[in-house]
Length: 324
Image 1 (cartoon, rainbow, N blue to C red):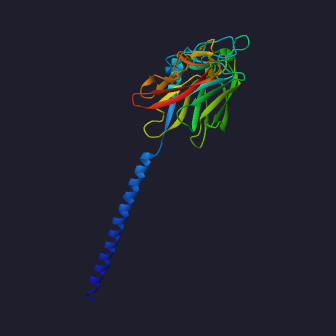
Image 2: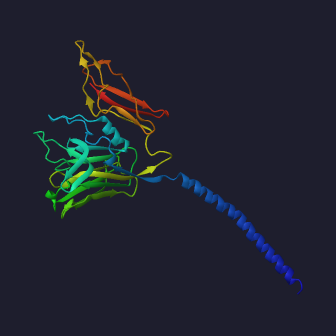
């Protein structure tokens, strides 16, 4: 009977030892797993938001697009304006061919602030509507990242003349293969009972695969519909979400140079619009192209021009265009 306390103490000691060993080994495992989880968490892509408000556009009042083939009315653009738009991570294009610009629109209820205009001349080189209207479509392309959410703030003219007139826009999201991801429609009234307001329309995806979105007006008051702001999510991978350097080149085939009697000529393209490079680190950087400007070429053949640009960190970008 006197030995029972000893046996009890031994049993308790062994139990404590087993528990201690369990926690030592499993504690190490828990610590290891937690450490690996923290390291893995540190490598996870972060979702960021990008908001574009045209109020800080330093070039408003000038054109983003540079001219419309097939129309007598040809306008020159400010290349710096297009550079500013692209530096925000987007590009804006239109169909039918038209002129895209930013400016303020005023009425007896105030001003819109700086918004995106879209003018498509008719056969008489006239466009009654300054904004999106008719069978026109604007495309907003995300240049440097894919998204799972894009939201556009739209507006009409701030005038009591359009009080109670409803507007409808359709927004469609596409992936990089131009496959439809999502589509939504927004009905809104910009002016109601002498009160002016904007509206927001958005598309969403369950993954980061939105490459570009389109905006099309179904109903609209006179003047059309304007873009006031653009918001979208993007994924941060590593230290930057954007390519270090991007080069913009002319669209399509440009015609330049002077043909000689021997059917040779000299290719010149130094002043071609949209030939520039932008670095996330340096801003605008020089572009070097081959064949170089003023090179000899066959006048009736199409020549491929390959351009490169390098920023101060050594990041390199390449792009090309054609000329004949």
